[in-house]
Image 1: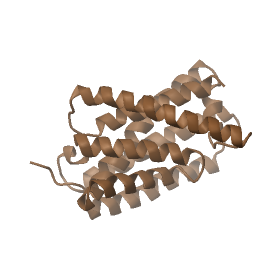
Image 2: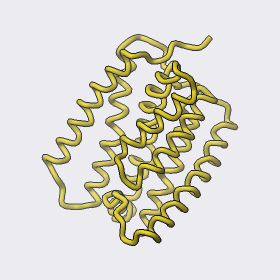
Image 3: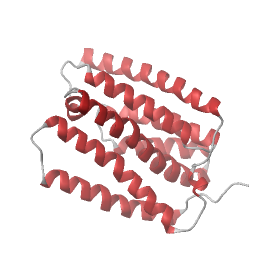
Image 4: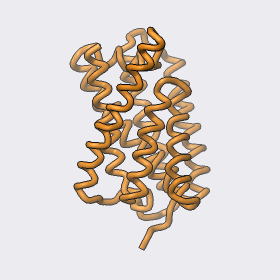
Length: 220
């Protein structure tokens, strides 16, 4: 039996909690700036991972309900392997896109300067960026954007759920060079959620995708 999906109440609570946690985090980062760009990047990643997890926790606590309603359920291992392969495909597409953009617009800012600085500041910083940006952030964002938002939107059909949640996910990352990659990852992970009813394939894809980019950033 399909468990009850997140409803309007969960979405309203998610929006309020996001304003509190994201707004509070941004305020702290602005109010207490750091001079070291590597440390600033690590702090941004810590914030980007902890904030969605906090929002998700608040949403779950709104009503007593099985967390499997948010896609926290087991999935066949073959889907985890497929997620790795899909991550490789997404990486190939976006790396090609980035190469073309860099050739057409030399010196264009990709808005990832702080993350590049953090990943290339030494082995300690690289491990921190992978732990926070490669593991924690994908988990938090998948629980929030797929587990809550996509599951809520499914009442209007799978295509609406996948497309709208992917667009919101991309928009959340800003109108910049990250937008296309976030939209692509959102599309694929939305489809994985609809297909498997689980967030774990999307988490795996997101982890592989983010970690690969952080390693590329560390190479300069």
